[in-house]
Length: 199
Image (cartoon, rainbow, N blue to C red; front, side):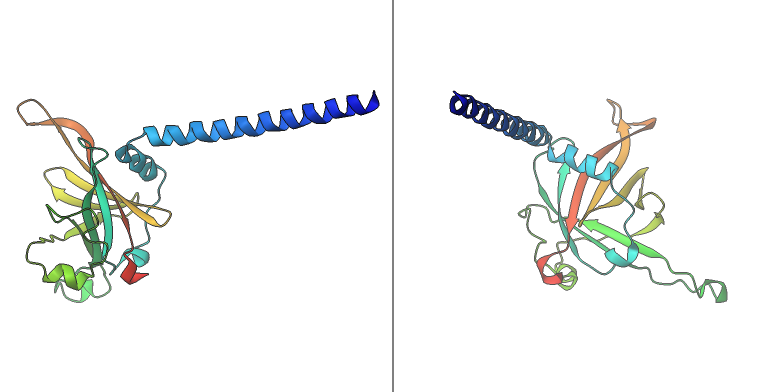
């Protein structure tokens, strides 16, 4: 009788442990599905919200490779690159001797595969006449690295672990394609990583 009682207890304990581990697995699967149900565009938005301002010293002079996802096609990757450098000093005389400013560019090559920049150096990119790189001055580094593209369009770069996360923010347009005053939204999100040649 004691043996039967003991066996029953062991069996119940095993079932209880199995049930608990199954619940943990189900919870993990639920979390996993919640993440899988999100678009890449949304996932990058969360990473940007939880990110921090990158240190210039960790970003500068690296041809970062990446992928972009638009608001309209949130799961479709396109190729992307990002490069930050020290801006050429303007000859303002002695008052500007100790002032260092920076500029950055994000760029794409239309029609190429998403991995296009994964193995490209800045020299490769400079040598390609079909890639137009337009550098913009960094206007703020308090809450991300901010570039002003003009027409109220800005880029905000955050750091999330080993990735850089960029959001392109633009005015909301009405039906006649006119900007609605004081209304903005994120139209594009990109993430960047250091390509293999730079590791």
